[in-house]
Figure 1 (tube, rainbow, N blue to C red):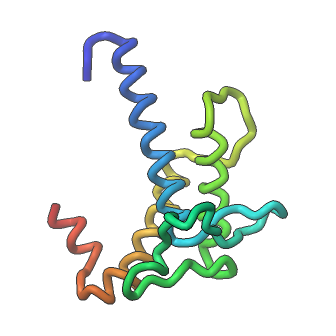
Figure 2 (cartoon, helix red, strand yellow; figure 1 turned 180 degrees about the vertical axis):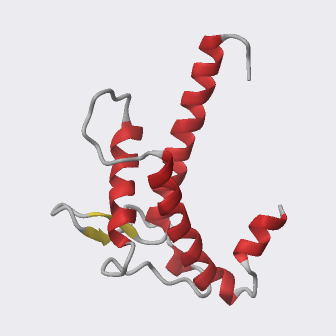
Length: 130
């Protein structure tokens, strides 16, 4: 890290925003978002070029009624609200490190059991090897 506190703050903010964007994208990629009624819902294509896990061999969207869908939808909403523009003192859903880690574990597990299993790759072993 830099010795300059402002540079450190800017670096932290950039890293934080990147994490929120990546998490929102991953959750949407496996097919989950928060619906208008505050429940887990299915991501929909906004454009013909939008890609989902179901577009890949072995890809199956995460079931909005499955265990963990509430966590994914809540983190998706929190990342969407916190990352859309600068916020302070809002009441968006929790996007703490603990919440992001819980959502990431759900995403990785889903990816491992779908597209990576189809490709014959153990995702968790791959991650640990890097």
